[in-house]
Structure formats: C-alpha cells, structure tokens
Length: 183
Image (tube, rainbow, N blue to C red; front, side):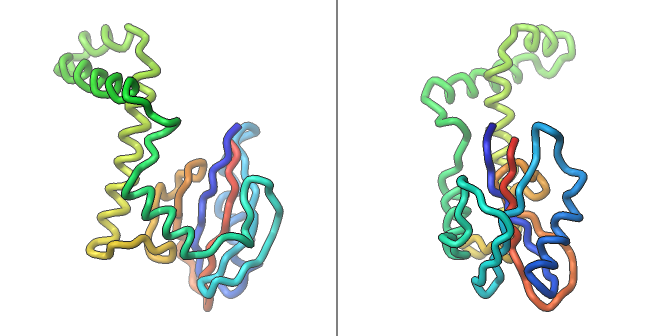
C-alpha cells in the first residue's frame, strides 16, 4: 500500500466548508483498495485546520512555501518512479525503439506485446504520464518560474498521485484541502 498526498484547492467561506466540499466532490472516487483520508486545510493565509491525523503526513509542519518548493523540485527534477536505475533507462529507451520498429502495424505490435515485456512497458507508461503532468503544468505557468499552489495544477484529478487539483466554487476564502490517498 502506498500513500500520496493530493492537494485540492477550493474557494469557499470556511475551512470546514472546504473539507465538506471536497468530500462531496470526491465521494465516489476510489474502491476498497483505493481510499482517502482528508487531513485538513491550509488557508491561503497559511492557517491550519486539522481534520484527521496521519503518521504519513503532518499538516502543522507544512507551509505553502514548502508545498510550492516541492512542486518546483518535481518540475525541475522529476521523480520518474521507484528510483530508476541506468538499466531501467536503457529498458525504457529500448522499449520505445522496439515499439517504433513495429511502425505501429497491428500484427507486429501484437507480436511485440506478446513478448511479455510488461515491466518495461509499465515503466514507459509511468515515464510518459510524468512528462504529461509536467508539460500541462509548465504550459499553465506560462512565464512564471515558480509553482503556485493557488494558481497551478499538477496531475489534476488523478487523486491517487501526488498532485494539485482546483475546484470551481465561489466563496470568500481560498483553502487547500490536504488529502492522503491510500492505494
């Protein structure tokens, strides 16, 4: 089982309102093996409101500046997953080369897929997903050089990944709801 923190930004009138809004919006998300705990909120002013505790994440020791810094680091030095070794990179490159060698001909592609190189394909999928998250985030940031939790998204609506999702609600205050995703 792994845990990922996903931040959900919402503009409502209170911290409790932010928590209930996010709970309502994501209530149908997940299964018995993929569930969540809403830890609390951080307001745009940096105020905390705890909801539940977790030994995986401490809300009170987190600042907006720290969160922004973690996404800046992720954009500059992506975590391609599970500590990719040089050998893993060679496998990913070879898998891309092998797929392109099929010219995407259905018969050749099927033969390639039947060779049981699923681990390599799985690593390639993770690599491409991370590139996708980074490219969408960088495009939305335009000329800004630093990630802003209250303006930018990362892996939006992919709640079981480390990311930021923004919800469209109107209220007087902006909150970041911290969700501990278990998958």
